[in-house]
Every structure is written in structure tokens, then in C-alpha cells.
Image (cartoon, rainbow, N blue to C red; front, top):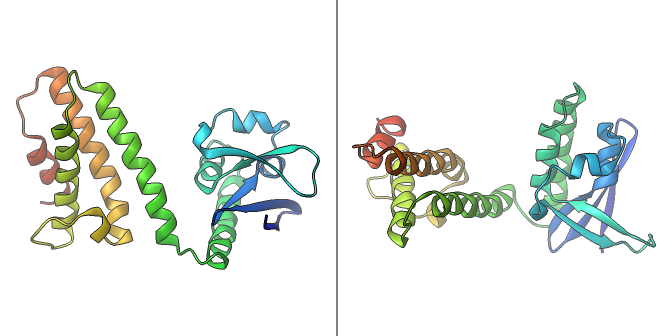
Length: 202
């Protein structure tokens, strides 16, 4: 198991590589951010951002946080150092990624899958009788909107989009799903696609 130690304001923060992804040791991050206990930071994070592992030089398991989880922990941190820590973290993780042969856009595509999963789950839970057509419609509208914004006559699929397009697609998909839910909930007489295109394309 590959472990690398980085220094931020005299705090040692260890990162562990697991299958090409770098995870930070939760205790190190909590100490650097000024938490009295690690659990005070991790209790607000979803399980998907956390894992545990027994490191070679330790007799007990430690809690690890993935990149997205660390950013979420930082956004909850209210002290002035938060922005400085986030900037430092971005550069460190970027360097670690490159040492693993993973480019930034590949990591983003992994995160994009999580957003897609969460958004579709929201649609499933909120509609009275969700069908496969609802999921296809939401993605089709988002794909067409972002494709049109970038001058494409035909709608591109996600695997054909640039990192910039994928970033723009996230809020469009979220708005599309939210509007689909509101339309059903309040029985609104409107075209979801038309409203989305009016906001993001025209």
C-alpha cells in the first residue's frame, strides 16, 4: 500500500492510494482543520466517502476519506483557513493523481457518475409512478441543452462530452429533475424541456 505524507501549516497529512485513488487519513485532516475529535468531522459525511484500512505501520484500522469527501468536509469548516486548505489540497491531490497516471478529467468522470446516480435516485423517490421513460427524458433534456450551448446540432452522449461540458451538465440535470418533480407535484401545465432550454440555451 502506497502512502505519501504532505505538510500543511506544519500538519502532517497522510494520503493512501487505493486502486488508483488517493484517500486522506481522517485523523490527520481533522487535526489540521482544528477538530477536537475526528468523529466530529466524519459524522457529517456519507458512508460512500469513507472507508477503513489497516496500514502496515499501525496496529489498528484507520478511517480514510476520498477526495470528494475531503472537499465536503472543508466546506463545512467555518474558520478562515478553510479556503487556504482547499487550495493546498487541490494542488496536492492533483499531483498525486498525476503520479498515479490519472488525469483530472478522469477523476471528474468518476464523480459525475455519483451525481448521476444521486439525481436519478431523487427522481425515483419523488415521482408517484416513475418509469424508465422519466429517467431517459431527464438525461435527454440535459444532454441536448449542454450540447446546444456548445454549438452542436445533434445531442452528444455523456461519453462524447468534454470535461467542461460535463461540469455544465450537472446543474442542468439537477434543474431538469427538480422541474419534473414540481410539474407532477403541483400539476403544472408546462413543458419541462422548453423551460430548461429557455434557461440554458437561449
